[in-house]
Amino acid sequence: MIGLSLAFRKAPVVPPTEPSSLVIEVDIAQRVRVSNWSGALGCQEILDYLARPEEEGQERFNEIADLRGVVLDLSIADVTRISEAMKKRFDTSANIKIGVVTDSLFIESLIRAFNEQTDQSHGFSLESFRDFEDAYTWTAK
Image (cartoon, rainbow, N blue to C red; front, side, top):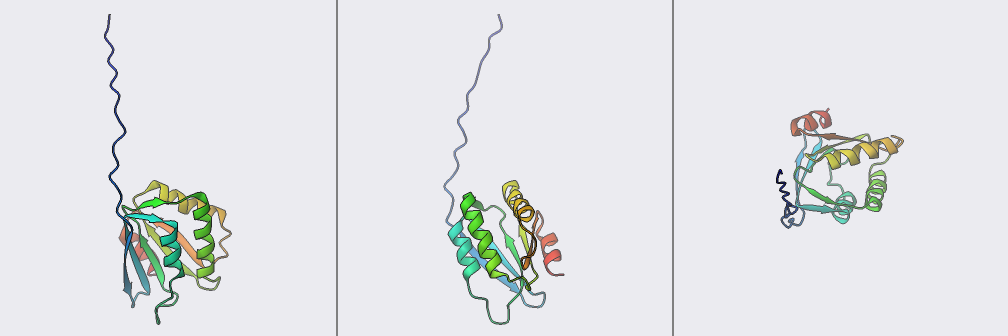
């Protein structure tokens, strides 16, 4: 008789996530604003960022959102609210490029779904990248 041993593992304990924080860097010459996010990022933080006033002289800058290591806390309704806020922020004549740097398949999937569900008549292009330099090259063009 062969003995069978089953080992049950507990799900790994996820450490508590730090609240979100944001550091913004601006490359005036290339007209690129880089938002470096960390911690847990929820709908309200994103809506607050989108509602912030533009700095004088930095209107219509392309954007990079560095979300590597970020944990998103969003519902489907939140994604819809963010989508509407983005459409309001970037009027149809803006032609803003928004590169999202991420190490998350979930975030990449959200961006892909957003692009598939949107008619592209809004004032921005949204792309995901794994590499910061690739995102920078794309947004700085």
